[in-house]
Structure formats: structure tokens, C-alpha cells
Length: 216
Image 1 (tube, rainbow, N blue to C red):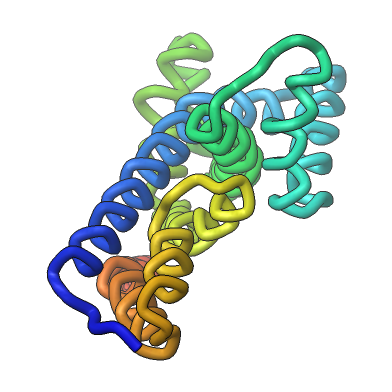
Image 2: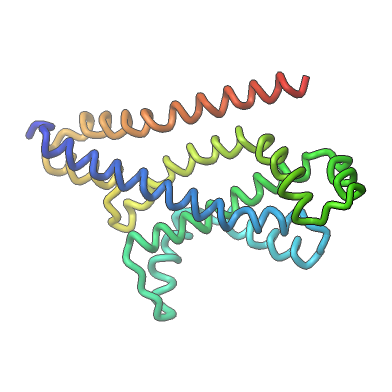
């Protein structure tokens, strides 16, 4: 058996960096696409509600791994060949947009209707009502659930290893096969995931407790 030295640790941290980058891209893209999904889902237009409900159902009702396979192999069948990095980024972004859109839709609908009616009575148009009245309250309500989803997203990036994308889990597989010490290697991999996910989980719990106190 080999030893877990500086080169191996460096390779694991390289994979860890790609995990953080992939998570950041998926979160940013999912947030940008998820907000229109949430607004459409919470709108009073039946056509928009049905379309976005179907969109959310597809991504929440199918395995994330299958979505990654479709992004990588399925797009190739129609002539769109993406490298592994781009394919997993697209797959995670679409998945994140559906989940965040649904979370934020629930938060928007949780804002008391009187808030929107009062803003309308003051003469604020739809964009102003959403930007100045509804969305600030909705995002506050959605903070704990959003942070909780981000934790799941970070851990879910390990599925990118199936497409040979070298993120943290895939880097751990490679190092474990090289030095034949899987228990040690995966302990380090787990510690790295824990180092980023645990603070986020703690922040989510504190936000939820703070909101509960504020409501009382």
C-alpha cells in the first residue's frame, strides 16, 4: 500500500476546488433561471402555472443521475456535443432552477396577500410590488430552505463522477485506486464535504430558529 502524501492530497484538493466551482455555477445559474420559474408558478396566468409546474415536475420527479446522462449523452444525439464539465454544469443548473423555483414559489405565496393588495392600492405596478414588497419578504422566508438545498446540491455534485468529471469524489476514487487505502482516502473526502456542508447546515438551522422567533 502507498501513502497519502502531498501529491495525493493536492489532487484531492484539486477535485475539491472543482466541486466548489461546479456548485457555485449550478447555484448561480439555478438562481437566475429559478426566479422566473417561481414568478411564473406563482402568477395568476393558468398557462404559465401549468408550464412551470410541468417543468418542476420533470426535474423533481426524475433522478438527478438520469438528468446528467441526458445532458451529456442525450444532447449528443441531436448534434450538441458538450464536454463533461459543460454537461454536468447544464444538468445541475436545470435541476437547481426547478428546485429553487419551487422553494421560492412557496415563499412568495407565503407572504400575506394583504401585502400585495396594499402595494397595489398605493399604485405600485407589478414589477415594483415584487421588487420592493413581495420578494424581500419571500427571500427571507425562503432562506432556511434555500440553504438546505445548497447543502444537498454540494453533496449531489458527487454524481458528476459517473461522467468521469474529476470533482472531489472522482478524485478520491483515483487516489484510492493508486495507493490502495480507500478507507483513509474516503475519510479525507468525507471530511472535506463535511467542512463545507456542516457550516451551511448550521447556518440554515440558525436562520430557521431566528425566523421562528421573529414570527412569534
